Image 1 (cartoon, rainbow, N blue to C red):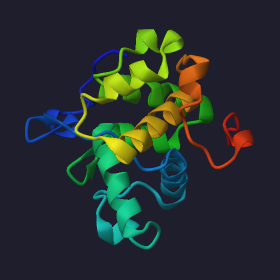
Image 2: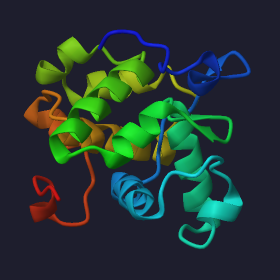
Image 3: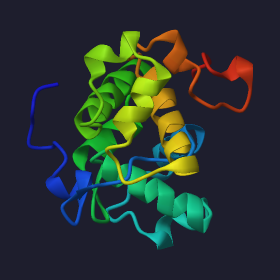
Image 4: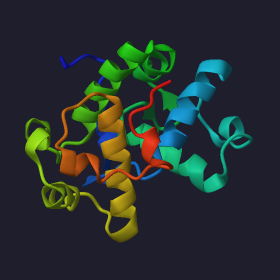
Length: 173
């Protein structure tokens, strides 16, 4: 995706000079947020007073961290890509999401995902400041987001995503 002035700033991908933690909220909660924002509108400030009635404290703070990691928030201010993502058609949303993922996940060689193994993905995610259950959840978010964005993934990597039901993985709204 070509670089534009709307690309994430260094504060979205790094915290105190270290790589930021990738999203580990469930991807279905993230898509619920996008659908809610489509109805509510994207606020000028994305702060607790706005989202607390819809999302619990832990889900809300994880969503804010996910938005920052993906370059959709700069501190509490939504970036232009957030509005585009929220209001996009399903096809446009997949395209925008693919670009956001490729920009945000610097440790992931996207050209290798179509033939990658689960061990390779776990190794790539070791460069982020997460481990254990948080790493598993972060990988699940990434794989579900990549599937939604139609990014080519090996079958073994596709199976790394956790979903609520087996039939849900290919469904789109």
